[in-house]
Image 1 (cartoon, helix red, strand yellow):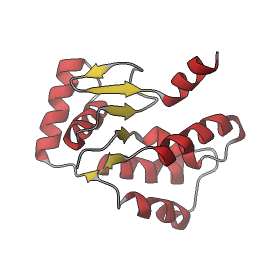
Image 2 (cartoon, rainbow, N blue to C red):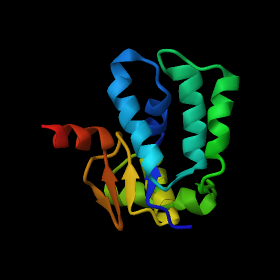
Image 3 (cartoon, helix red, strand yellow):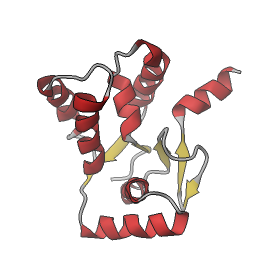
Image 4 (tube, rainbow, N blue to C red):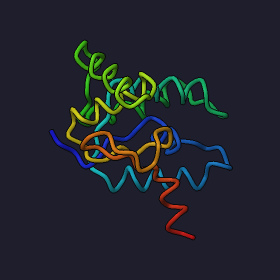
Length: 144
């Protein structure tokens, strides 16, 4: 089940944003999604649904969110089980990150993903065999 990358919630959320100031991030997120063989976790699915229906400037309807969510469920998806919780806690303690970020890293490891595309984790940070890439920051650097 190894994939090229694990995609964090924020990248998926930007891909569906209609907020005008997020236009560039939306295009970058869509390009990453379209060009990457990626996986996610059940945590990301849940966070995506809650964020796009409740937390963005122009929330989506439940029906629209479900239409976007359904194809994501066909990707490699890591379930949140007791072992993942323990792995996330170990990541939290070892790297001094939040539990939720530890769960993202642990899920990426389970997928065998060498890259985590995320805006929340530190760009360039390595967690064992997995490295964080902020696609929005990387894009800005390459355009300068």
